[in-house]
Image (cartoon, rainbow, N blue to C red; front, side, top):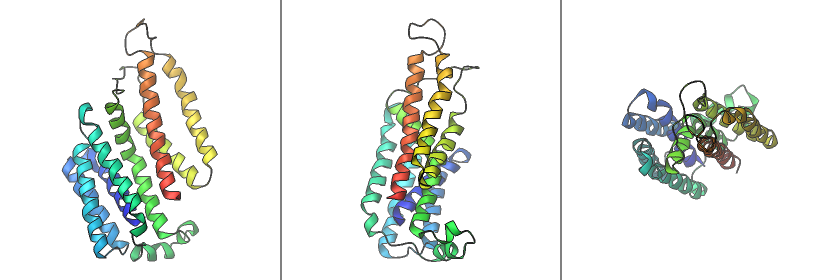
Length: 242
C-alpha cells in the first residue's frame, strides 16, 4: 500500500498548491513531496525507484491535464482512474513502510498514532489530502465530462459554499468511516440533501417562468456533483480500510 499512499499524497499536494502557482510547478511540488516522503518511509529498493518514476509521471500528467475543457475532461479522469487502479493491483508487491516515519509513529505521544500500522497511517494521510482539493477537481471534471456543468446564477440564489463544504463533507464522511461509524456518515449525506432542498426549490421551473437556469438543470448539477464527491470519500475509505 505504500506506493498507493505516495500517489495519493502527490496528487493531494499538487491540487493544494495549484491555486498559488503554475500547473507544472504544482506537479513538480507534488512529485517531490511524494519522493521525500517515500525516502523517509524507508522505500529505497529498485522497485521503489520505478514507483517514484511512475508516481511522478502520473502527478505531472494530472497537473497538466486536469485544467482541460469540457471536451477533454475525460483525459485526466482516465489518468487518475488508471493510476489508482494500477497502484491497487500492485499493492501486494509494495514494501512495508519503515525508516524515520515508523520511528516517529512509535515515539508519538498519542496512542492512536503510536499504535497505528505505518502503512495504514501513510495511506490515511494521502486519503485526507485527496479530500481537500483533489475531490473538488474530480467533481468539476466529471461535471464537465457529462455536460452537467451548467453555469450557476449570480446573486442571492447562487449555490454558495460548495467548494468549501465539499472538502468538509468528505473529511467528515472519511473520518466517521475510519472510526467505524459508517451509518453516521450516511446521515451527513442525507442532511446535505435536506439542507439544500429549499434552495433548489427557489429556482425557476422547467417551463422557463423566470430568469436563470431551470430547477432541472440545477438539480442535475447538484446531484451529479454531490454523488461524485461522496464517491471520492467513500472510495478512499474503501481503499484505506481494505
